[in-house]
Amino acid sequence: MLNDWLYIGIFLAISAFLPAAAIVIAGFLAPKKPNTIKNQIYECGIETVGETWVQFKAQYYIFGLIFLIFDVETVFLYPWAVAFNQMTLYGVLEALLFVLILAGGLVYAWRKGALEWV
Amino acid sequence: MTFISDPINFIATWLRIMLANVGASPDLTAFILSVVGGGILATGAMLWVTFLIWYERKIIGRIQDRLGPNRVGPWGIFQSFADMLKIFTKEYITPNGADRVLYNIAPVLSVASVLLIWAIIPFTVTSYGVDLNVGVLFVVAVAGLGELAIIMAGWSSNNKYALLGAFRVVAQLISYEVPMVLSLLVPVLLSGSMSLNAIVKAQNVWYIFTAPLAALIFMITSIAEVGRSPFDLVESESEIVGGFNIEYSGLKFGMFFVAEFLHAFTSALIFTVLFLGGWRGPGAEQYPILGFIYFSLKNVFSYFIFILVRGSLPRFRIDQMMDLNWKVLTPVSLGLFAVVTIVAKLVQGNPNELLRGLFLLIANGVILLTTSLVMGQFAARRRRHLDERAEGQKLRVRSQV
Image (cartoon, each protein chain N blue to C red):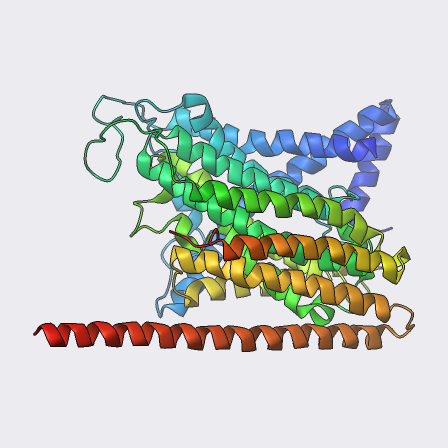
């Protein structure tokens, strides 16, 4: 068990190392002549105006919240699904009740217009 | 165990014995084997991308009635190597005012997040990186890292368009993760395990036959997760310049490109493992090398479908894309989950596996039929509404004239 996660750790290190090494090698091979005009931000073809890190619309936040609800739900449902074969029908119906409450949340968000892209 | 039937384990065992003879402790041996195995797998995956790019360009070329790359080497097979040489010698620019740390980590993380999935893919009955008992959850969790890379790239570029692009991408990716995760529940539920190898072993009948709707939802959402046509709002060159990677150049941009292709292929890998029976086929248990051949064939087939979808469908509008996810795929996958659990529980006592599969297939068909009927009704109503509005506008214009 510990060996499994050791392997994952090593693999994470390797999979981060490979692209990083490629970029470093490219840094040696490629020419490096930065200047002020070249380093300017491209934006859409004209010079940038004002701050970049500005406020953004709240719509993204709402989608993020709905996503969070469903994602937490899955963390509960996966262990339940693993134990599915040893379960009685009562256990299944209980999980369905849980899903139904979440579906109620989705319907609420839908009716409130939170799912409209504006 | 001979070299012909299972070369990978043969070499691994040979290496283990040799290390023991040299006098290495078991822990050190495990560590060295992990480093060697992981290194070969990850490097192989990175090199494989150059082939994938050629393969995909060739097929897309054929779909669009072109020849595709055909100059460098036979059938243009070395085109990607030429591109790689070019991109290695291209200067990369860090824009003024960029957040340097995040800006440099983002391309590395986007590749790493995809490569990490390869650690748990079972290629044959005996050769896999590691058989995690939480495999499916691991796949979902690691896919989340890719979103982090995108938001980092967009945020650190100091460019409003890149930031806007990143927001849109992340909104798309997190939304499509919901039905994807729900459709992945179905194989877990039917096999009673989250380990990928156990799921493959449980597929006496492939899950694409017992749970075709889950397979369809998984395929749609994984195309959306990769962010290619028809869900290529990630790029949408005509709308928000180049998306989140507009300020990247040279190999740093190339890394996002590699990550995209590798992600598409990895999605096909997971699709093969979960729904097409992975390495299963006649004789695959005795001769693991046969299993690898079956796996590759199935995988090429599923990747071909990914490319076919990319080559033939036009891009969605962003509100349509969000509607498809939240108003169609999510409710359908919730309904699918509910129906599959009840049906699977009711037929569980039946010893005939084919009959059980048939019941599940019928349940899936019923949901698919209901969905298409309801969607047809909605679409007809919406069309009528739009037509009436257009008619009203025409009348108004005419009365003004």
